[in-house]
Length: 272
Length: 285
Image 1: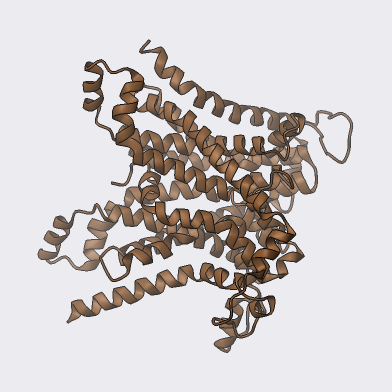
Image 2: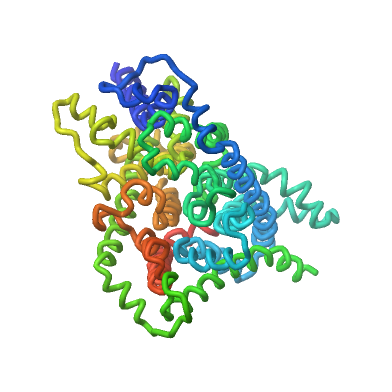
């Protein structure tokens, strides 16, 4: 009897907590399909006839597709370049350990502690001198560099989980380094590599500080588009909601499918 | 060959990060000791520590440091405690657990700019906001959250975003908790509180360390939420160090003072980092 009660209470509590936490997003979703009048109705409307006008208006007002393309290019680009640099580094540290490995890992993480705002002026000046302000190139490079320490750490933990004996055996059989990576390490660490890439993609897509300060009309990402709605335009809630929904939907849906991967990789192997 | 190859593999990452760290740092050190305001063209005379004195005696400085620390401590505390509670709640199977997990994790993927606008306009607006309508429904006076409790409001929206992260890491960790040991403890008469205190909590020590570390890295740099909702105000009530330096550099165009401030932020970040590295150092090997 008591067990049934606890089971019931747990179910209700868990659902209640989840719906409460999700409410702001659910509300954003509903508002995106309302008219401006319905959006600010008192008391709030839960039932209404949905309209798609807001989405059309968002695209008409500022080229949403251009910003979406910029977000896609910079986040996918920085993820791929990041992986290309981080995978060899993590591989080297996990399988050719030296006394300095630990120090290098710590140092890499410490560069992530350096607040972005501390690097803003120099990077701004350098980008300006090189004529790279408001270009996708500078955003991609900056996103890559700021995610690199976390990527190396995640990949290092993933590689370290592979038992040394398997590699030992492959080397005895005369496998080249590439062969060893391709046929032994890669299949065993695919989950870790995937979760590293996923996190990098999410972080770059949502990045606001560098995007707001280094780009504007040409290379602006969705974060810059959304921030532009904080001006008086922001008062149009339904359009703001539609723009927001368009900006977050791809990455939130993507996150739903990859949550398991992501969490396993994010814990740096410290959680088993 | 066996000595060279590992280094060659490591070199691109080390080189890139070295440049990423050193070049801005050296430029910042240079900027910080010269008079350099973008509004006053001309050469940049050496002024010694004047910029530092100016930054540290700025009336906004003390509050900004305080706000940064209060913000950091509050968000970490809220997310760890509530995250743990939620994780324990959804640890055992119940109908719809998969959907509940999806709903719980969603805020983590929302971009900070959207998070800020969503809370500012749709939740915390004193007239039409959901919170205002809720309090009116309960017969209370609606609160203008961003004006009257700006720091608290920013804490709420950022904690909302990071709670799922803490929660999911704890869920993952709980799955590896030794069920037989738990059962044995129950047989021996250990109550739920004792079992939590002596078995679950020690098991969660490492994931807590990981959550604290990752959150600190990202929370020290929180920018968009403040820039979009309160712009640090009213006054300096929700200004953190990141935002204060941003204000000096891009709003006042004072590169010299901003650089002095940036060096201070680097110092603070490194003090925090030393604690963190001690904490997680053990989980490295």
